[in-house]
Amino acid sequence: MNIPFPAMIMMRRSARRVVALWLLAAALGLSLFPLVGVQAADPTLSGGALAVALQRGGYVILFRHAMTDQSQQDTDLQNITNCATQRNLTGEGQTQARTIGEAFTTLGIPVGQVVSSDLCRALDTARLASGKAPEPTERIRDNTPGKVAETTMAERNAALRQILTSPQPAGTNRVVVSHMPNILSVTGVQLNEGDALVLAPDGSGDVRLVARLSVADWNALAHIVARLGS
Image 1 (cartoon, rainbow, N blue to C red):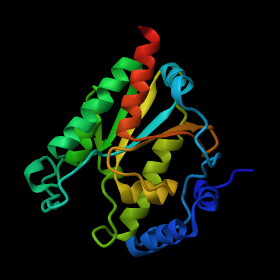
Image 2 (cartoon, rainbow, N blue to C red):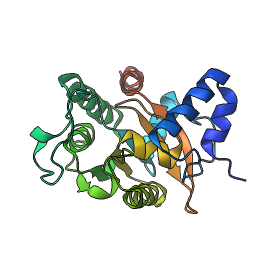
Image 3 (cartoon, rainbow, N blue to C red):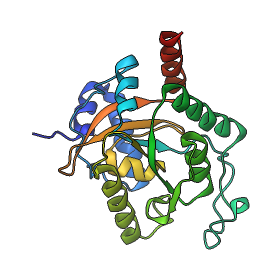
């Protein structure tokens, strides 16, 4: 029986954090019941075991874009290639994405398809973190309620779900970069900027949560593997 990830993790959090999550989702107009049923409440791999698994491939690595300048706004999405009219990565955000990319190289993580929201902050994160040119798509663009029609939000959520649950062959990993409203709606997980979920599609429309990683976690994992190899 598959138990939705938020239902399990809420049982492990304090009452205050549970209430905070519900209030946040309600304020954003997001569904409290995610579209993807994650099969495990807790990450199943860490440390060297996680590194080995990622080296073998077969996973989807879902990122929220790295740190941005919150004082900026997206003002002209009709001209999507004009980064000057969008909220962009800060210098620290660029460093975060490069740190992840360096960790990928140190860990020897094979990257296949790279799919990203077509906003500049997501594309820059995807390129710097994966070391590859991402496939930009409006289908997983920022889904902030009040700025996007409900039908469009539903379509984008469905698109992200499809990308996350599609089987990923062993040998490479799929990298996906999207935005907090989309990720929260689809997985029920609230990620900080630059955070990632490692997911294993099960072939039947669900994913198993393998790991949750911050930028610092990627760096620490790379150091573990580097020490083992020295």
